Image (cartoon, rainbow, N blue to C red; front, side, top):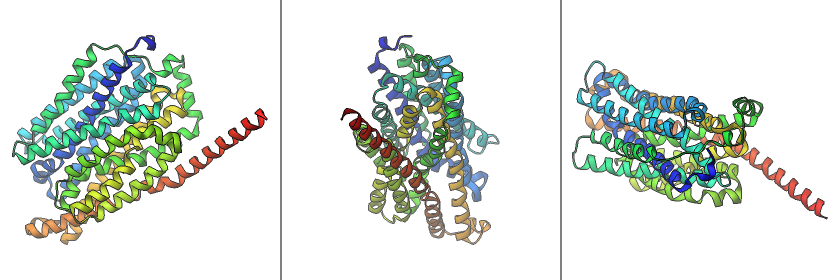
Amino acid sequence: MNNTHIDRRRLYLIGNLSIFMIGLGFAVRANIAGYLQTEIFNFIDLANSAAMVGEALGATFTGFALTLLFGSALVDLIGMKRMLLLSALGYVAGALGLMAAAYDPQGDSVHAIVLISLLLTGLGWGAVEAASNPMVAALYPEEKTHRLNILHSWWPAGIVVGGLLGVMISATGLPWELNMAVLMLPSLVLVWMVSGAEFPVTERVANGVSYREMFGELLRRPMFWVFWGCMFLTSAAELAPGQWVNIALSNIVGMQGILLLVYVSALMFVMRHFAGPIAKRISAVGLMFVSCLFAGLGLYLLSLATSPVLAFAAATVWGVGVCYLWPTMLAISSERFPRGGAMAMGLMGFAGGMSIQFVLPHMGGIFDAAKASAAGGADKLAELSPEAMTEVVRYASVESFQSVAFIPLLLLPIFGIIWLVDRKNVDTKIRQAVSDNS
């Protein structure tokens, strides 16, 4: 199909809606995480309920990562349209499964139903990324960093809408299961919009790059795998705390953590529209260096916050830091390794998804261990008074946040060195051009 006959504006709107849908799903999972713990997992295993929440939420990222790993290689075969339709199916099926689990929260199979349902939403999430990212790269090859950041600004927009709806559902005393109905609505709209649209081929196909050449591009370029490893850590700094924030901050500062996530998401929505000009001034890698610095500082400050005011101040620093991480890493992979096609972007997303699969249960495990330690042993938890349990949980929440605060700081020397080498190479080219024109 000739990409010049494609309606770029319509497809970009579809891409924005698909990213909005997965952002909404992220907020819904944050909304229901506490309910999963108190209404389901506490009845199964009180001492390890937080780790079970982490495991359940981590299943989402497993599905996300697996779909990106295989879907990015298959998107050229099955097409972007089918991939987006599969994403909507995953969200609808996952939401229905969670409703079924809530209907019988103490059933024998409820744990498995929750895991499978969240896995399905993860598969839908991965299918969106597998289709929408290469679609935008193909539609706007001349401004990938800018367009991918704007595309992914609709992720925090979805979080804002989903978070506020979740707060409203909670404040009005409506059943928490209503969050799953919220999750299904944009999925059905996406099906309607995608069904009547024509989609482009990926850059790899348009440029005549074979599958063999695509894999060869990735295997022969060690720098791709350096960035791939960095994606593990940037994702852990952004997505794991975001999914955990409602549980942790509700305990640390006595407020609904989802409100803080809504605030950070609104900040990210605005800031991602300015990624292009910033990257042109300091480069995409320079933007990653600055972002990691702010992300590490913000996470540590979040763990120290003792009031809503301090929590919002710390969240601002964290939000500025994590704002550009995910879309800029995707843009870097597409700009530096264009022959890697959708597979290169998919592998980056796979790294991000698998990172969270490991980090979220780790945070939950730290939470449970700190909770048991503060109580004097896991067997003492059930004997605590409500006041004592509150203090124990607050301490455990601080520990779980501090456990990930150092992660983005590990990337500073890596991005710093790449940034300096890039600047040196640019300066060398400028001097050579001046010399040639003299």
